[in-house]
Image (cartoon, rainbow, N blue to C red; front, side, top):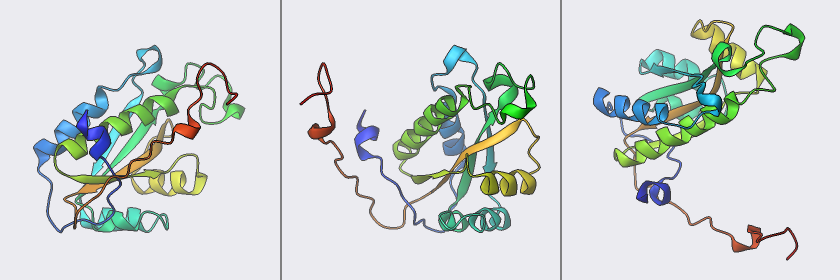
Length: 180
């Protein structure tokens, strides 16, 4: 479980490719995530081309590191798998009542832990529910309408030493009831 305590967000990367085998192990870890009703609504788009990474970096002021990352993994939900009511009520929106956000979040965390285990660095970039980011990404990469990018992970070999922080705060832990 050391990866949990060693993981930290890395935003600066060396200009070095990540081996395909490492990316595949990262994806395998994502696929091992728990999923409500075992729907496993995840789909992953791996982006390694320089021009595409630069295009992603331009989509959000918080995504600049994508240009220098070795790869970007888009963690996407297939609403047909993740939302049992998909298509029944078009006015409802993108599966707000489904568990796909939780499922994809678990998959992203597994991927981030495996990234650490591979000796790499990565950072989680929130994409959904920002409609502008979802639309620009979906258009650029021709995602079908039932595929929604929840978040992206920029990853690569860290430039410099990444130092995790101990975030434990006992004041935010409540035992048996909320009262102190």
